[in-house]
Length: 127
Image (cartoon, rainbow, N blue to C red; front, side, top):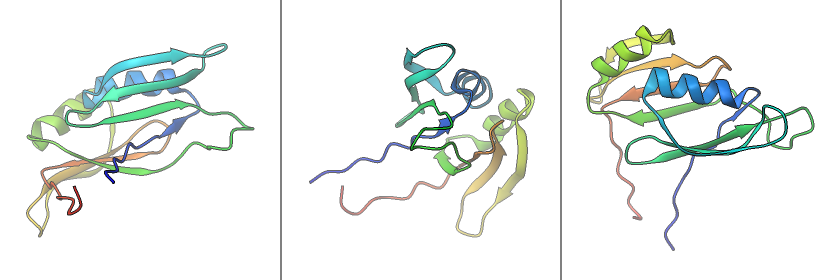
């Protein structure tokens, strides 16, 4: 049986999160389903070879908002870092060469989730 993982961060202000993720990290909205008021029922964002799904959350929601930590493999972490920093993302770990061979940095989104970007690309054994 093949399984695929799709991260699903929840946001109090999903609309603002989509804008931030697009502007800061280059994620591209593939679909956005709006709910009542200003809520987002479901959104899918292209993250290169993968995607994330996100939505709005509320007080009575069984799926609360983060914070969570995510890792995204990128080709050029230096350029990615510069884009994020230029868009106003809070850099919580500057560009670092890790002992396991990855070059990476981390940034926090406005709702406290930490997004790590680097060159490390683990390989699943059961794929």
